[in-house]
Image (cartoon, rainbow over all chains, first blue to last red; front, side):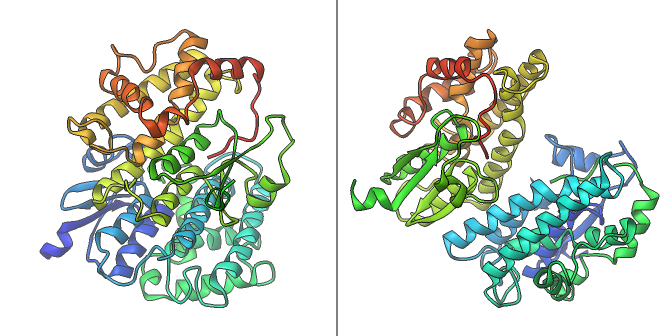
Length: 233
Length: 233
């Protein structure tokens, strides 16, 4: 392990969208890191996690020279600001566009996780209703994409930005849920621009490694049908 | 109304902590604004609000030259970034300290509103339990204050910062709840540093006007015992 790698550690679990977005931000900036994987079993949280995030005891935690940062969107902003000289910039430069990205990122974290938990069976609830809520959210995000991307590849325009990272982190689960629940969600016919965006972004070098194949999520979902209780925000 | 005032409008309601934090940020930066008050009555939202925040239909909305921004913490960051040349800076300069402020601001918005709604009777729930949750959150914030302020006046050090704004916006309600529910919350004996901080900050010129007297909140709470459904994040 190089000195550079040990300077940045991420405590996480591969299936967590919140962890995935931290990895994408680091890969995008070309920052080496060490991934410290938590065990999946309920109640068996590592000493390192408990010490690093004593308030929530949840992943992900970024350790930078030992100093812990929690909450995935806080971490992504930290990565952008602490490595501000490393291209690309993650947050848009224009204050209004930054605000719009932050607004939608918060919308995503309000709406997607409850619907996803219900659909994968880790939370109780009406699955049909959850699929409807997820589809409605994706419809709004389709419209937001058209407005923000202005014909370019990403929410961030020509480059991957904050909102791209916030949303793409859920794509692995959404693809898995399409298989598990047999519903069309991120679908060419329903949200054509968003479906094309997801295809493009998942092929991006910084994203491809961070998001495992949908089948791996399906397998995980079958194996652990109850919540891990280590996933967080 | 001057041209400067009409350039910035805030759609809100005076008792909302989320509105209060927007007003404090604007006052702190010395930005003139026009306050556009929503009606309290359930279901009677203004056309301006519905048009400006079609996703959530909630206050506060900041209109800057007609362009709408929603979600209070997004607005506070926008004010800091759009008027970056107007002192003081609201977000700390150091990336790690910024991350810590953002972490606690999110903690506050996760923990305080549900407990406050139960205690004021606008949500059902066990009031004793809610008071316990609120007290526990304030205890953690007391410790965070000691660590972040390092003997200075505010979470932001010598100046009022992001986390000061995020938390002080609830002080009017907390003081009112102490009267309504007869419980000690922001109390000298329980959270001495935070109690002194609240006293100091509520006397600050940018804050004093934005937070009405506790009695006004008590009166409001008696008059409108059910949720307004216009308050937001």
